Amino acid sequence: MSTERKSTLSRVFTLAWQFVKRNGFSLSEALKTAWANIKLHARMQKGIVKFYYQKVDGSIREAYGTLKSDLVPETKGADRKPNPTCQTYYDPERGGWRSYKLANLIH
Image 1: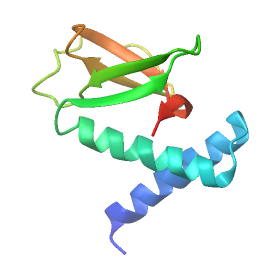
Image 2: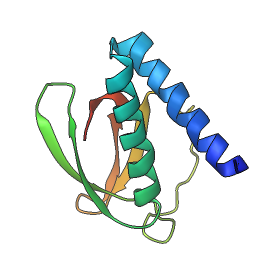
Image 3: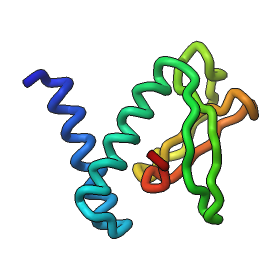
């Protein structure tokens, strides 16, 4: 098994266990959500992607996001510590950075 594949599987299982412990997901649902997040992250690195997630207030958000370096503006002074429970993305429609809780991705 390649090192890249092992790394991906490790990220999936780490994320899935986080969903089980913090959000009360079943292991099956946690694995589905973890895979959906990993795949979405990979697609956002290649271009603009349409996806949905549940906002904190319970409403559903249709989002367009990207992480592709030539589509996002240069960031200055990113002094924030990354939050392992959230995914940050650039929204080209609104021209700003947004984030969602990984457990709230709708797949």
